[in-house]
Length: 360
Image 1: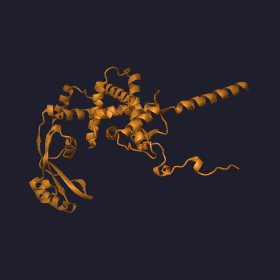
Image 2: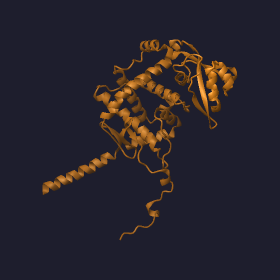
Image 3: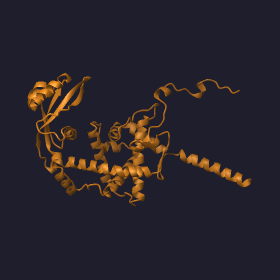
Image 4: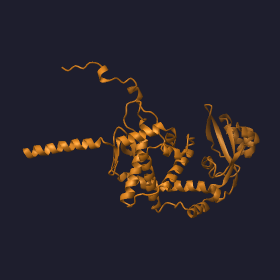
């Protein structure tokens, strides 16, 4: 009986100890822990810095604003940040334990890479952040910034070891450019902004053989219509180049597509036609930033498959106050915590003012 009692006492003590440990950290990934205080400091830094919020929104779209109660972050923002934290820790642990590599020394290259990624994410999402990516990193607490740089360095090392990725060397970028030269043509475009009521007439005139310039002059509501729709030329150095290139992919010269895009202007929807009127080869020296961005995107796509495999195998626990670790359609992810709505907490009362308690 005494042995049973002793075992029971030890079990209770262990449960208490484990309980204390479990509430002392916000997340654990394959043995690496991040304390509640550290995560709270990170979330506070994100809320206090508009420039940091902006770049994180670009990197992982979510609401990083105030949550249901003052001093809290929106559940989606907290979950998005925890998700980035989990991914960084999982990759860092994998690189350390499987590839036996720990980034050390000068992390300047990792910082440059991270700043470039954040800048490109902001541009891709058409966000005008109130400062640079380097200012966003500077707004982080030192521990947060150190983790981000270590995580980025680990990610770069992992990518460098994948057979499916392209080295970020000048020779490799030039080879990629040579095999995708037409993807970096300087593009001159014309547009036609057409009232929906005129779309059928536009298509009829198009079928009758009217040129791009004639169609724009006849139907376009855009000011460029007066000059045949000529809108401008875009080289790979333009911040709008990516979206322009996507809009005119595989289009023949001087031809409006038969299926237009849509634009919402003043609450009304208009048909938008875009045509390429001229393509000219862009030298590698001019196209290099766009080539670098495309190669990084290609590498990131290859790395994401490996990352997902790492996350599936990682042992992850998340404090329910910050989020929920689970399997979504996109793979393992930190989902938003089940928190009260704003309406539930705006008129919060204390127990002493909620009414007298009676026990019978």
